Image 1 (cartoon, rainbow, N blue to C red):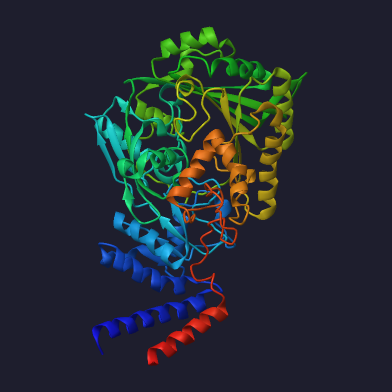
Image 2 (image 1 turned 90 degrees about the horizontal axis):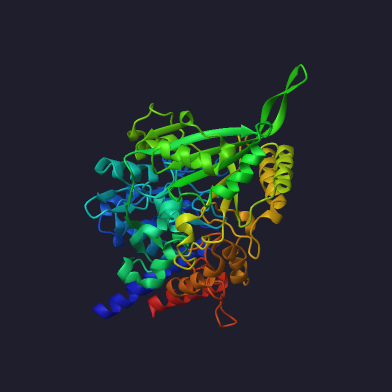
Length: 581
């Protein structure tokens, strides 16, 4: 047999093998049926084939459950009925990430990308379609260059780890990002915007991203220059998981003083909390941009004295939690003039280093924890919770606030966090990054409810509380669109089924998250990922195709599932005959 003939026969045999396997897989791919072709593909693709079997976990692997559960932060999605991935891939090398993308695409299995941080709706590790998790928790290298005031942070690092590595090198540098140390850097926090208690002085995390590395749908690694202006714009606030796999970000550090000041002051309605909130709305978005005044509103029980009797009654507690890039004397003087309802005095304040303020904001008792605690990823720490978001553009009146208090007390569990804007946020155009919520917004609201008892009844009760308060707030928040914050992911505002109405469904939530920037994101997505391989329930959709008979959604079905079974059987027999002719 000649070489050419051998190769032809070999090709036929390979295709025959593929189709025979495909015909079995059409009905329902299993963890084991996907494992062999995926592993073979990944082994051939990567530079370190000996590592491959150690980074791919099937459902029957003894470590599968522990790897899956380690970074599930919302226990709502950690149940026996929650759909599980067919495989989990935990790459150690960039080539393994490239290979995972290429091989998942080749065998037609959906890929979900998890970076080891928070995911409020679990879309990085849950899907109702057969899927593989690409888990980047081992991509956690951080390089800090103090001389040039830049850092390179891999996608699987947490902001706590990042803050610690900055502190190791400099006591007068920091970075504007989240206040929870276990928030992940990569596909979520930075690529969704990223905000923290330096937002009014330094803006968002994405405002300081100067380069990025991403694996695109073709398995190529692209930096800022290679990906081009549009894609670089998109991954800085448009949600990286819609466009590829974020490997790392290069960011510019910001200066911080040697001493910063924090405080926490709480008042109930009986202590004139309503007046405090009215003043807060006037002060927090307009005060010195070095000052961040978060407002936490919670329904609580409080002792109330009526005549000679002391009883417990429901009330609202308003807590102001502050961060100031300066000393306590200056802060007390400033708020004594601007915010008298707070009644701040120096005894309320604590001066400390920036790194210790990170610990304080993360609820570690002042002076009892060392910075090394920020390296603790606190895995397997899932709680049961629901979050929603809103933006407020006009101050809420006293009557409006009193109605809100009544509703919150009636519901009993759902609280709110008001995060002020202004300062730097007013200086950056809304189109500078995909994150559009800048000038014109006084503050952002996070609706928050946590509960401890598992089960569908409890979940429905508490999530419905959050939805009911969200509905009640309609007159007080932005409209046309009613905007939402991508990093407070909320499937209530719309999901995508990637059918014939994929674009319209995508616009339903996309305009809320991205306002006028949504259309540019769609254009970029259509160019860089036209088949919509990188997708989730709230990813950026592609534009509809022009051919009426095609799959307009770019849903990326199983590669072989589009072939009817009879056609595949016919092809198999044809190939068998071809071998013997």
